[in-house]
Amino acid sequence: MTKKSFVAALTIMATATACSSKTPPKPTEKPANQQAITQKRGDEPVKIIQPAKISDQALVELGKKLFFDPRLSKSGFISCNSCHNLGMGGSDNLKTSIGHKWNRGPINAPTVLNSSMNLAQFWDGRAKDLKEQAGGPIANPGEMGYTHELAVAELQTIPGYVDEFKAIFGTEKIDIDKITKAIAAFEETLVTPNSPFDEWLKGDDNAITKEELEGYELFKSSGCTACHNGAALGGNSFQKMGVVEPYKTTNPAEGREAVTGKDADRFNFKVPTLRNVELTYPYFHDGAAQTLGQAVDIMGKIQLGKAFTPEENAKIVAFLKTLTGDQPSFLLPILPPSSDKSPRHNPFN
View 1 (cartoon, one colour):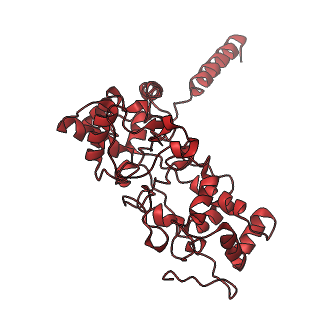
View 2: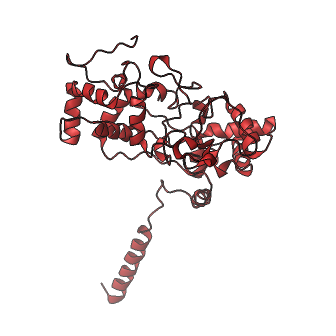
């Protein structure tokens, strides 16, 4: 081979190599315009809800069993799921919940879904987190009607639970701190991503309809996002119920005042999440609004001083229904059987 032909061969090889080294774009990559849309929508007051991250699966599974176990109640009939039914949007669809001895609860049960995003728990925020909240209903005489001591003593008589607690915590001794830690770990997994509106936020223009998008624009322009914002569209502040006009109710709940003792906090309630709101009727702390349309009209009047037209109301309701995400989906837990030493509950006594 002559020197000239050798150089020519090298040139051809280099050219061929350069052409073949061009990597085609990955099919999973978003088009540039969709990336731009997603980035732009990142400035919206409503944020994308992210899937749950589980760090301790065994603790979550234990918490799931405890969440569904009615033996944490005095009657042996009421569980966490009784008032926060995971087949009904994490609520019970009642104005106020039914407690021990058919006691009528004082307030509407808030959804447990996405509750890990709340700045505090309960309508008045008296529990700082899910762990503290989980212990409240067990010992409330009007809810589950038990005591922490009796609940712990009962679980200690159930070999299956003793084994699980030992495997997770390294000791057979069960206490209320471990119980509430497990329940909270399970509740933290109850997030609902991938709603149609989340898909729109990610850049999919076809995820919601024209009417639903117009409803969202009305929702924003009317001032609703001043309170209902973030990934949960609420749960991150306390606000007065009845800003423009007083809210009329016979419900005795005082709101945040019951916790702080401050008159200025009277009728201040934690703003409820609007995620999955079409599933969690009736609405408000007293359960007075039976439909989303009623809730929108009342909020417009007493919070914003605005009377929505029927068309505007329908558009906002249509938008709110796009906030229903993937519901918790799992096999119901098989609860460990009681032993001969376990108490036998009598819900009729």
